[in-house]
Amino acid sequence: MTFRPYSASQEMNYESCLCDSRNKPPGWLLDKLAEEKLKGGYNTRKDNLCTGCYQYKSVNGSCGCP
Image 1: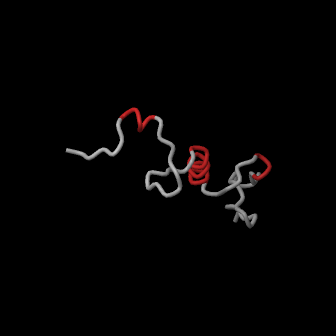
Image 2: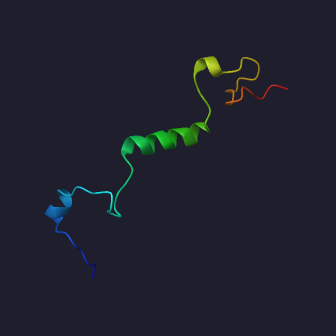
Image 3: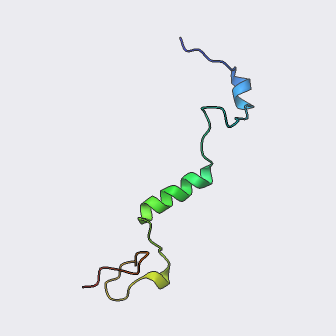
C-alpha cells in the first residue's frame, strides 16, 4: 500500500514550491540541454562548417583538417 498525501484532484491542481522535492526543471530547459548534448556543444550554423573537412568547428576554431 502506497501512502499518497494528496488525492487525485489535489494532485491535478497542485502548484509546487521551491521547498518541494518534486520540483522539475522546466521543459524548455530540458530541451535545451538535450540539444546541446546531441550537438556535442558545437555551433551547428552553416557559417561554422569547415569547407575542407565538412566538420563543425569547435569553440576554439579547430576542426578535423590535417
